[in-house]
Length: 177
Image (cartoon, rainbow, N blue to C red; front, side, top):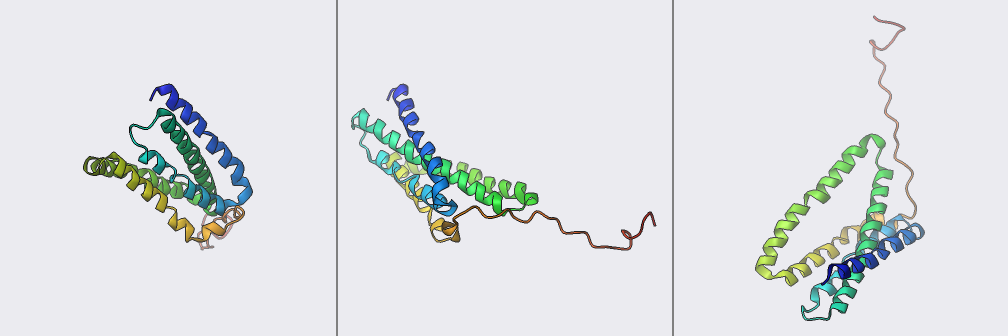
């Protein structure tokens, strides 16, 4: 596949991110997270099943379709879930919450890369892609069975007030003791 054709397919695919951004504001936070997670990866299975001898037009079309679904899913999901996390987490906890989430998300990528390489060597690329797509598709199940799906609007920001220090003898009075 010529690099220009792949670039065109990805450019067409970027439409998904734009469409998702327009839709997200209209259907509610919880539904946005669920729909984006559910629709993002399944179309990739079509690309995994295309025979190597298939016409280039079919491959490019499926790559563009994947780009649309992936762009929609990834961008919209991430914006909605990060916004929700930030809304329900007190400001003083934002750094810890984001660091923890980044550790879980980005920290597992090397494990997936090694596992994908091993599976690809043992089972072949096509079977490994299907296993990866299935895993990504079933990752939506925790969202399906959680209360997140029912959230319509963005929750009010979490309480940011720090508790007042208790009065002690050292803090009482007008000056040094």
